[in-house]
Length: 124
Image 1 (tube, rainbow, N blue to C red):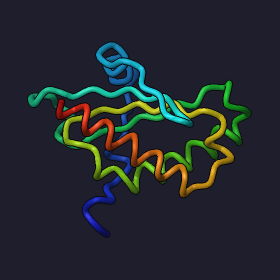
Image 2 (image 1 turned 45 degrees about the vertical axis):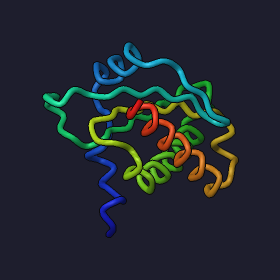
Image 3 (image 1 turned 90 degrees about the vertical axis):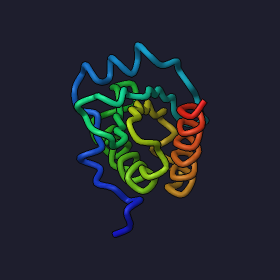
């Protein structure tokens, strides 16, 4: 398995406090089918150097079956493109309902575009 395809479970934002830190530091950024927030972590952060990603799917996106399907599709797209994120970066993704019906190839392109924008924003 290539190094770019990293383990999704280790790259997850898990704690509510981590999500809140991202929201406090970042501004809202939008793409065609999702909103995203990101922040750079300090070098001495105990979470390590790996980039972390969090997904949110609220009830407004549909019933549990639909929300779970959105999460599964998003997790796979994120897993495939996790290597594009710089180290020590936290990203939170808020998908819109159209993620459920869009083609997976289009979803992958959008995730790659978002991660490239995060990488450019982190360098700036």
